[in-house]
Length: 473
Image (tube, rainbow, N blue to C red; front, side, top):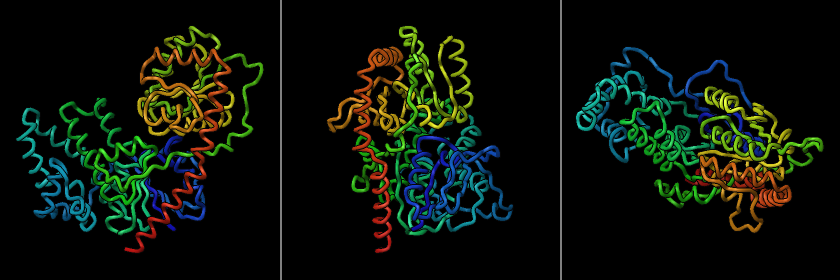
């Protein structure tokens, strides 16, 4: 079996999160051949693989969303849309329910220069018409360039390579899901999509907060990602979410309920047996945060809360364990914040082997403003460590359980609530017996409900099922 695995902004160049899941998935199926298609914003000569590529990965293909293409003046001059194509593109850009089959066929069957398309008369005409009806208060050239920048990444994916495979599996919706939709449409082979977070909702939250999108254009960007999500749901044979709440949200966004299913994240709890523990002479109470130092992890709120807790319990020490490279400016701001506030005993470790540190922690914390079902929490449970986490994604279900009877494995706190997070830190720091009880509850939950072998066995069965159905057609 050959699986084409499609990822955006992650594996093999980014540590943790979805990348770790992808590595585990590939390694769990040594008998399966994987081709990895990875999407990045632009080429980076300094990029390095963060993972040892398993031997069953036969190829890694890359696409860059911001690539400019210039084919030839002859081909550029020849691009003209048919009436059907014009209607489909106009609906994609400014209408509702675009005919994705027409759009996909256009890019697959024609030699298209994106520069020619985005600078052509048809694109100009439909953009001008919408501008005159809705945006005449802004400068037209600004509006035109916004539309070009909005659609260049999508069109880049739609003219990307089509790999022959038995099944296409994207690790998200968005551009990865579009690449999967393109390939399943052209080959007839099944397309499986796993959403670790709800892509449409995450992009909406990102755009609302973004400085790089002018306020008057935010609705257009949000609507574009909604349509992209609809395309992914339309073409996917099955859509996997990590927990029931996410599955229901997919249905609300238009995914047919009969396509949806839940397969949670998994952890190999045996990997955490016999890990190094805290030394007896260590008199600190160690609090660990396993995360990428990025805005979505809200490290600044964590630092503020820790500063308050530290003033009440001087023995506290905070380890922030994870990459500082993904959002270097934000990471630098976090370091400066710790220094400016004179917060003592904060250690930024950078990328580490989690198993070498996690056993030495007394408890763990995650203050994200958005999550799916964090692998870091499951790894903490496997190490018998209780967790403080914000009430996002499935953190509440992991920590408090979903009717499994194991009890609470930590404390759930409101997003960005510095006082409540500080209170939870002080509360757990003061009670070693409570930490031990919670750590045991998390361990039992991880072993019983989130065993990695069971999770990836379900994916292997799903691959077989979908490929079998595809062969019957």
